[in-house]
Image 1: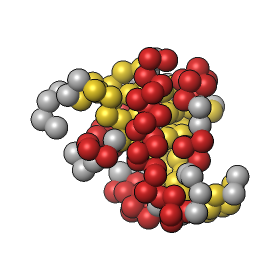
Image 2: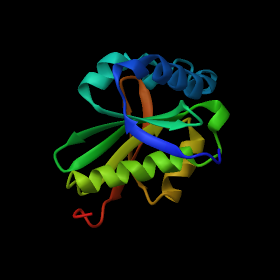
Image 3: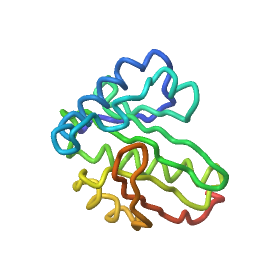
Image 4: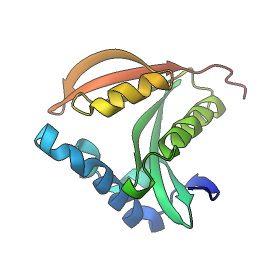
Length: 156
């Protein structure tokens, strides 16, 4: 997408678009995992009310979503998803960069996230952004791989 993109706070008017993007992005993993990935089970109306949720707009439509939750001096990326028609255009990287800016603005020392161990694309993607794997564990019936990235220059 060559047009400008904008990342803004999500509102309840974005619930349908967010839900659609999440379901579209995660549906291909159902056969691998054997059940719906955890983000597909979330009620995004509730998520918007409880977390820091952002949407990425491009070409006049919501194309991506980012869900952040601060816990002390760590910012957790709970979900990042881009619609299928916008995949491979750098929007995921743009959202992750935005998450780092948010972490700095909040004075966090690190960003943490996890992905399913069967989402091998993600396990390869996050280290390219500077994340390092910290552990693997089964939580809520999902085999997860945890990542962490230290944030430099919290005064930015």
